[in-house]
Each structure stands twice: as structure tokens, then as C-alpha cells.
Image 1: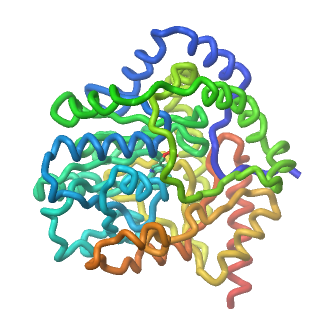
Image 2 (image 1 turned 90 degrees about the vertical axis):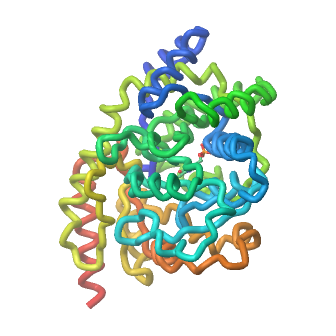
Amino acid sequence: MGFVAPAGTPLSLTDLARGAARGLSSATIVQLRRGLSAAGGRQRAWLASTGRAAMTLALTAMKQAAGDPRRVEVIFAGYTCYSVPASVQRAGLVPRICDVDPATLSLDFDSLAGVDLSRVLAIVSANLYGLPNALEEIESLAHQAGLFMVDDAAQALGARYRDRRAGNFGDVGLYSFDKGKNITTLQGGVLVADAGRVGDELDAVMNGLRDVRPTGIAATLAKLPVYALLLRPWAYGLVRHLPIGLGLTPWDVDYPLEPYSPALAGLAAVQLERLDAINGTRIANAERLRAMLMDVPGVTLPRVLPGAVPVYARFPMLVDADRRAEVISRLERVGIGATVSYPRALIDVPEVAARLPADQRPTSGAREVASRIVTLPTHGYAPPEMARQVEDIMQNAAHARR
Ligand SMILES: *Cc1c(COP(=O)(O)O)cnc(C)c1O
């Protein structure tokens, strides 16, 4: 039976061939950088091996730009990708968790009340699933407290908040080309920023990187056609039970800090040129799901903030915690790749908890999200009738509950 993978970007053979051909030209990486800085509404763009490498480099550049040894903490959302705290650790900084509001998945500033912001270097947004956080509010908090801000748009390339692009807020925006992101080359990370102090430090940090390992590039190039093939529902249905590490989120701080491979740049450029169409498909699928699920008892849909235009790398919904496992297995039985995305609130990840400051507040909102969230696929292989199937299953779950 076919199976709709939880996340991914469909790639055709033509995409792969055009991408590979364009990757041979040294002009491509320059064009890609130009396209990405435009996509972030910024003057400049830097490319790194992964999003987590990019995050580490951004925080390192900020540490150097601040030149203040007291500023050692980085604030981030209590429910976001594990790579964020891993990057904080890798940059030699101290994690501080901000709670999230389960109604919007955005940061809940109340949880920062009483925190001594003079010890904080930077605050990081999350924009999970392509839903913009209250970015202008985060930006003004950062501005008032004299903090740097990383606008983490790893899942939100193309999203907007109050007519500005995700990645445009604060000092540095971040995008990722990993497997489940808006566009993908299996790996890749992007920073966008304007010329200035942090940009100068980013130049310095990037210049200090060792070169890309050719073996790593060859392996990634070889995996691309496999990814493109396996994302197809008939193929994904065959392989999804194999132990190949699909969808795992392990704790890792030893990832390489390298430049992005120019050989991958062509495929990124091909997708970036089609970004509006790729996002348009995801938005249409998400709108169908929203319309179908809006009034189903036991389903809560995160509210889109006023002025936000999401791009839905996945579609999030909250269900009763004690029904979630059953809901996911019912969805999987009909071939829909529903997942819990990240299994825990970051405060409950032992590697993070061990490094938190003594006065870290509990994050009940993040725990609630971690226990209730289910994400649904939105990519181009999700069939239009999927929304109806999901509604059916959720209605049945609601009846079984009574
Ligand atoms: C994926 C992701 C990252 C890290 O990107 P990688 O390319 O996977 O290293 C950072 N932040 C968020 C919110 C992400 O989803």
C-alpha cells in the first residue's frame, strides 16, 4: 500500500538532472546566494553544510560581535528542533528556554519575566511547520534589551509576517535544506543578514572553515536520487519499516562545520526558483485540512497570528494526549504519515536539562505541545482526498471518546 511520507519535497528526475548540470557552473552558487538574500529581504547570504552548522556559526559571530564575556545565554523556544540547543552548546553558550503558547506555538514572553537579560547574547525564533512566530514582537524585545536575534526560518522559507519575510527579523535569518524542509538538497544551511558588524564576523567565521570533504559530497549526491524515489508513496510504503533512520531526531553536537557543497547548489537553485509553487501546494493542502478539521471535537488547530502568512512545511494539530498514539496509528493504517515531530519538550531532554541555568522556569506550554501535537504531511505527494480521510478518523476518535 502507498504511504504519504510525513514531510519532504517531491523531486523529479528532470529536477535532479537540471540541478546537477547547474551545479557544475561556478556561477550557480553566486546566483543561489543572491536568490536567498532576496528571499530573506537581506543584503547578503552565507551557505554552510547544515542548518545546525549555520546556527552554530551565527551564534559564534554574535559572540564575537558582542565582545562581552558576560553575555553567555541564548534564549530559544521550549518546543523546537533539538538542533537549536545542540548549536547553542556547540557554540560554547548556555541554553535558556522560553515557554511556547500552545494556542499559537509562538514564544510566551511571560516565562521570561524576571530573567536577567544582561547575561543573554541572543534570542532565537522557531517558526515551526512554517507558521511565523510573533516575529516583530520578538525583534522589539531583542532590540530593547540589546540582544541579538536569530530568526530561525529553517521550516519557514517563503512565509511572511506583517509583510516581511520569515528570516528577515532580527540580525540574522536562518534557512535549512535538510530532508523535511521547504526545499531540500538533503543537507545545507543558510544565513542571511545585512552588511554590518555581525556580517563582518560571519565573513571571518566562514573564512575559518575547513573545506568540504569530497567523500561527504559524493555520498550526498548518491543519496539524492534515492530520496527522490523513496518519497513516492508506493516506494515509501515499501521502505518505511526498514531501519534506515527515517524521521529520527537524535541528540548530536559533533556535526561538521563546513561550507555548503557547490555541487548541491544547482538543485537548491532549481527549487528556489519554484518556491512559490512548492509552497502553494503545501498551503492548498493545509487549507483543505484546516477547513475539514476546524470544527472536529477533540482537535485544536494552532491559530495563525494576525498578519502571518504560513507556508506549512507540515500541518500541526493538537489532540488529547491520551488518544494521540491511537490517532497516529489509525492515520498510518490508511497510509498517512502522521508523526509527533519532536518527542519531548526541550526541558525534558536530558542533554539540555543538564545545562540550564539554576533559575530556569518550568515550561508547561512546551510540555503540553509535546504531549498533544500531531503533524500531517502537506507536500505534493499528499493526495487531495487526504483531508477527508483525516477528518473521518478524527470524527471517529471523537465519538469513541464519549
Ligand atoms: C531543521 C531545523 C534546524 C537545523 O537544520 P539542519 O539543516 O537540520 O541542521 C534548526 N531549526 C529548526 C527549527 C529546524 O527545523
